[in-house]
Image 1 (cartoon, one colour):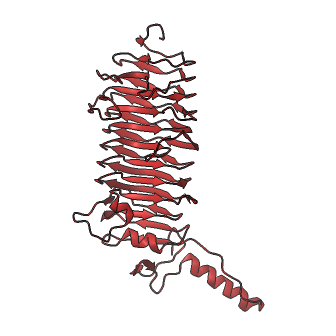
Image 2 (tube, one colour):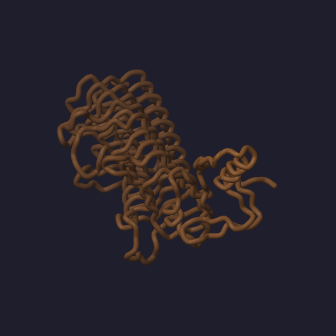
Image 3 (cartoon, one colour):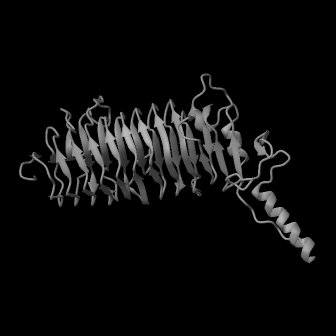
Length: 380
């Protein structure tokens, strides 16, 4: 008989008992196997009883059951496996675990009628929340292969995390961000699809509720994601030391925005490389922070020491102050773009220009780009 992925041998379907998956007769879990092995050692050798090592459990959630109850019952390091179906709830995570769906048909969406018993994640209007404490991050949370859609704020919202991974998630039609993180380090966001979210598909920031210098993300990675129909595909705001690479961005109002301010240290020290940023020509009305956005490929504002290279930026056309292929934009708060390198990009068919360098920044270089038009002239 073939074992389950977690080593359990089935002879009957697991039974949901309260908040945990409790195996019915005939199922032996990893943890039970460990205990049996220890008992065998005692019987065979006559040694004193040994303490069994803790082994991770897998909890399976079926349609009609609660993901949150499984999360609450899980121990750090456990896995929650959610079968295909629609789950009308928000999920609040404060411990290390893996939350894994069965693919895009595992859908987490708000209930039609919220209740007073909602968890803090639901109360804030988010789909999945991963929340640490001011004195302790929540580490190594993995969220994979599921869909979060239709939430008033973010599909996935994380704060004070370390080494969080979000992979093969679809985040769509959420009221603010698709996938967002603040006050966090070493996050990995890859192979996700973020579409039709009101703000950014993927958003990384130092903090959203106060000013301050850029924080070191310690090599966060945004890679191999597909971002369509959002206000901005990827926004990295007041952060440093990360890579945005090999993503596909099309049909947004803007592609990739690097945003800094007058805080110290400045935003930047990052790499934007190998992205395909084509026809981001949706129109988005301006707000108190930004003007209208349309036809914006890559925008740096208040950034320093950022390398933008080997990207394909084509057909981004608009009449917004932010329109064009690759744009170093003058900051509204006076922060300058300094010491950025724009190199070896294919930048063509963008209007009003393929390359533009605005403001009073210094030390910015444009070399080896395949382009036709620039502002000022002579950078192609």
